[in-house]
Image (tube, rainbow, N blue to C red; front, side, top):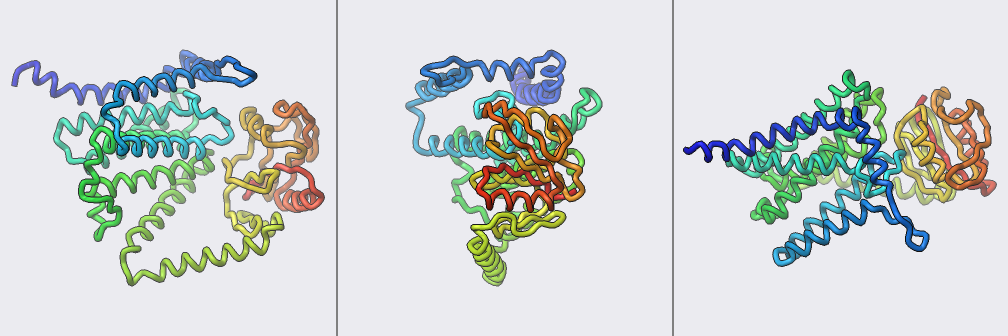
Length: 409
């Protein structure tokens, strides 16, 4: 082997090492040089046409995508388009599932940086392992493990060096980005070769999931999405152990149902699930006109739907979603909350009243100027049991209430 050939063969490994170091160093460079705030400012730059705000960044992204499509138009087919639609769907799911209180725009670089950076990492990892002639299933497995390991290490070392907190949600976004990258690699670049033997997900034996690349990639996507959802509603460092247990537990349950669903003797599982759905549907129909049906420490029943442990935001129109579990709302959280509040903002501060902090005054009732709606807003902070009673009373009188309920202490 000549010297040039040796250098060429070592290039993927060098790129992988350098890029991995860059993933770890970048957060410190952004913070120390105020680049993170600059990226945020750049993402918000816009111009107005007929009163509509049009971001410069969005125009740049559209021009870039159109240019790529034009350049590669002869190579595109329905398979490629379907694959890119899957990636876009994953991006949308990521946007909807994480950083709800941050209220990022969908084109914000700060919010999408994790996805972009680790999708690129997946490609560099792919080139390295491909050069070593690794089979697809091992590439998929090692890329996932490497992305998870590097991101976790990155979060840990940021604690003593930059005085930042360990954020499991950032790890989730990084891993989700790596999975998105692998979808592009194996369904666009590799043209779907991992499905050459079919789209079968279930395997007869557990060890066979590690031998079939499509099954493995699917399970990694499911685990990543569970991680994404749970970490975004349990982002506080005090909940990290609970968060990990819930993530692992939900994935094991999903995998058990998936794997056993091919076994005819396990019909009892599906019968049980069907009964649960029927019972839940019955209670929802029965209480759909009611509001808070029941509340105790760690459990709230809203319109017949039991919601354990997690915090809840109930909108004025009656719909709800799980939100980040926290005791203190910072300025950014409040801006998002004010954007949904019209007349009354009701806070259930927990069974012992430890939550509901961050408002201008520590009072049960206060009036503030809502900077989002440009109208006065009444803020009521009560212990959760009392807040639930107050919520039912206000809704029965027809008031527009935004209710944020802390489901524990």
